[in-house]
Image (cartoon, rainbow, N blue to C red; front, side, top):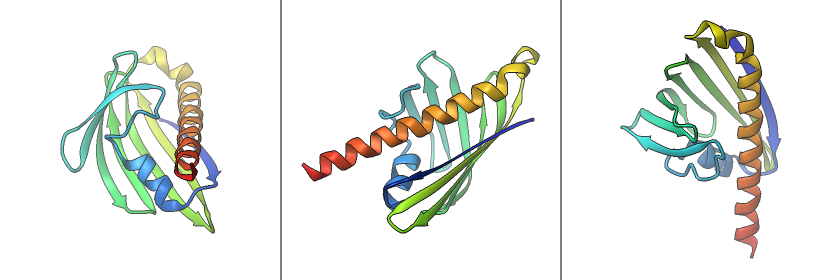
Length: 138
């Protein structure tokens, strides 16, 4: 199992950050996704631009605090945990992924891939929140 963690302090209130991360239907800010599908209250599927689908099942949903889910596709399985901490007018996010490769040839590059994906997610999130804030001010 490979574990990868990323942490960032975002200069936005916790409700805004939580809503952006947990709103599955509003995926347009994610540069890696082509679309998403909500299956029910606990399950959803993300479709990457390369066509890969990943299925998610929520296991913990504590608003403005913690969101956890299991994930699985044809190449990997594992779990993701997001911790959200209010810090005045900012929000500290801590995202951890624990992933097992289903394909032996992916094992050597999995940690690097996860790290790249996490950095991209944070970058996309920051860009989206900044645009959203700018739009609200105009």
